[in-house]
Length: 94
Image 1 (cartoon, rainbow, N blue to C red):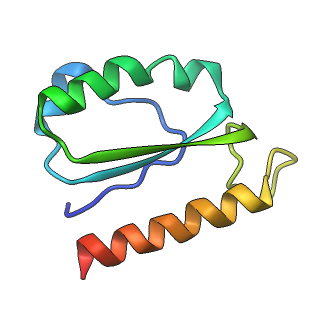
Image 2 (cartoon, rainbow, N blue to C red):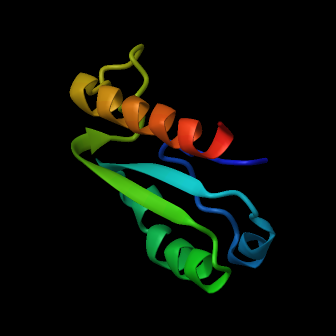
């Protein structure tokens, strides 16, 4: 894999993080306590393994904010996350 962009996904197990070789762009919803609670440990593991990464937290959003088939859909944040994702892929997959 040359790049990865998880949307509000559970963090990888800390022991598996050194196996990540691709740069990551991570999108999190502000109101997603279970997923967000994993971030500090995940971020520390990413830094320790020198995995290039950036995380974006979208204010006022819930888990699933990018899914337009649910009431949690947040159009402005979904568009911003998608634009960032495409730019990230253009940088890392070009």
